[in-house]
Length: 217
Image 1 (tube, rainbow, N blue to C red):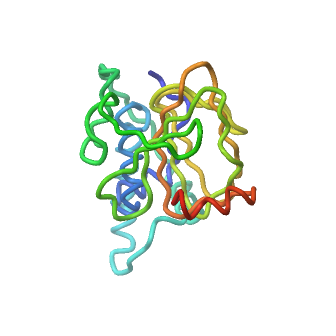
Image 2: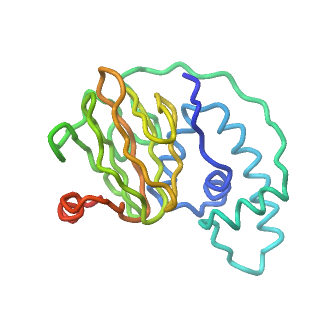
Image 3: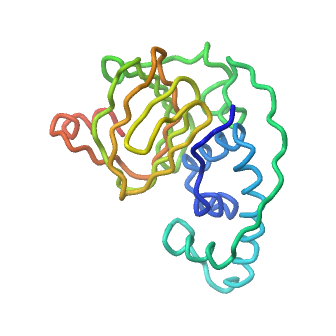
């Protein structure tokens, strides 16, 4: 598994500094279990985060704003870091960081129908943000939507595509309020993905908007 879509540096620095909401933090950790490149970049982000803390030790600086953080990262010019070899993966085993909130194995998940062709499992004990597993049938299209804040979507099984490209296992979509898209499941297998948000989605269709309070997404 060699992911092609990765976390941006702003998210990595926010994760390293503990500034991400719990839902986004868990999605970030799950991706890094599957991605050697982002694990290497995290080490550099931790170095930069430590330097920023030293520069601003007298001021509490929220690191959720991407524009300000990206500007600081440009100044820091992160260096390349070595990658460690990929670890073997049990096909039925969820990423270890998700075991407490979802359980250990896909085969033990209790899926609940959200819409025809879309099932989910809501995370347990997540206090900040919204975190869920989605199981979407082949060929199924999600409603067109943008975001009230940040969204991280990690593909665990299967694949989907949207205006940003094709996302396969290990790939993560790191999105903000400027992105509008419509994920569509690619191939003949269901797509299982981990979705984390820190604010409700913004749907274009009136039916989706009416149903949003019921679905809590």
